[in-house]
Amino acid sequence: MMSDLAALKERIAHTHLLLDLIEQRDVLTPEEVEERLVLKERLRHQQRALEEIR
Image (tube, rainbow, N blue to C red; front, side, top):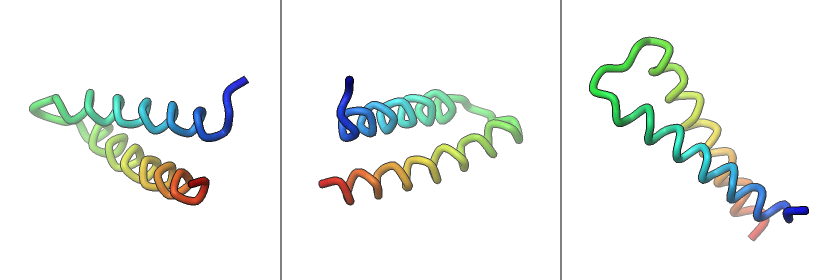
């Protein structure tokens, strides 16, 4: 079983990947703009949690 730290790092990497995929598009739909904002907020929370673990 993965440690909490490893699992969190995996979630952060996944969130980065999703953001990268969205940001590669030239034109974003309103839904993609909203998803991008949600992902950025999620990433901030994940990174804060990572800092607290360290």
